[in-house]
Length: 336
Image (cartoon, rainbow, N blue to C red; front, top):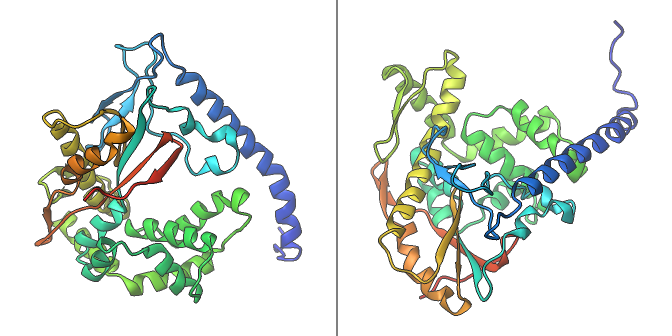
């Protein structure tokens, strides 16, 4: 076999993309057609879903079909990022409130980052997050040596940050970023991502957290507990895979515990409106437009309840949005 030449890489890449991109678009079209088919409303004009903690390792509620309702399906994994490409993919737009009502969404803002900062005892990072700093823009400034990162540079920083939280390699990050290259038009190399990842590890205490978690997994025969005492055993024979699962468990199970507690409290709390949907770290409500401030004022304390991680008391901020449909929600200032 002859040596591979880097000559004409741009031309070769263009040829490859001309073949691959139509296939990707066709796959997305088939996927979204399936979504529209299965979310078709039933006789009551609504599409239903059943939520339960089954089949999830973090205790997050799993949205699925139900034998109770004829029009019941998974509503949690609806396209969001890909919706930027074409109105056809704006699946969330079809979720609308009853007549005379408006949708309101309460979403934990930067929840996993807050939890990772706490579990890794990176207190300066936590303080920035709780102060509302855009950490991804800050990372992009360090990565690309610019005061005004582009939206694409921020996206790259965000992807690399979240993958690195859970011991993701530079190769994995490169692969993930290049999956979106058909939409962004930008490809990255492993060498470039390795350089950026090294900068990230200088900014945060992730490596210490990785090492401590690895030691704890060995010491406890794979048993970890989150800050609420939720216990899980990790048995993967590959120590690196076991570490990745353990690192992800800490923040994801903690956020799941918090959002589940909010749902439980809603059963005993009077508020103007009703819950329509739970989507990972977000709850979707409908209420009358005039009642939006009261709903937010009543429910914010349920979200922002204090808890302790690594000896420090903290909370996860909630971000409120409202709008005429799920695909068009705008930020709402918290009621005072």
